Image 1 (tube, rainbow, N blue to C red):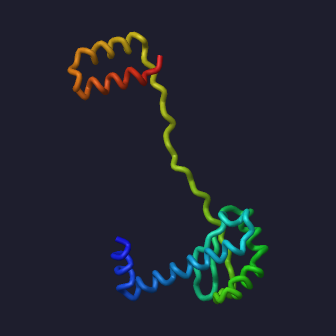
Image 2 (image 1 turned 45 degrees about the vertical axis):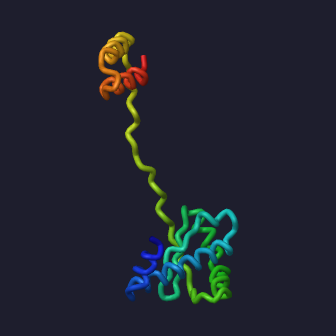
Image 3 (image 1 turned 60 degrees about the vertical axis):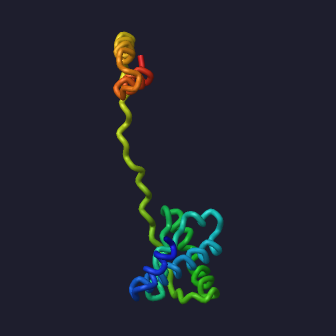
Length: 143
């Protein structure tokens, strides 16, 4: 599968250019991680490189401010490594929004209802799907 994907990506000029760009961004990301202090390593990510301007995405304003203070030394760091980065732009990434889930509703079942459902489940054949469902309902039901 990997060979097929690699063959597909290198087949066309546009896709080959895209693959080269992604490879360049990965190299810049690893170079950025070596230049950053430990606290910022997981907070900053290379977003793009266009016309000599490197765009770095920072998680949160505090990381962005700290990164902006380091810009001159980062430009030098990339230049020493042989990358043509003339300027760096810092963007604050939108925080990830956790997927909203409706809170589970508690459903209570009386003791009599549990007993009735249990008795009905026992009257069904042992391999009946309805019997399994009713037994599960009785087990999970709260008093």
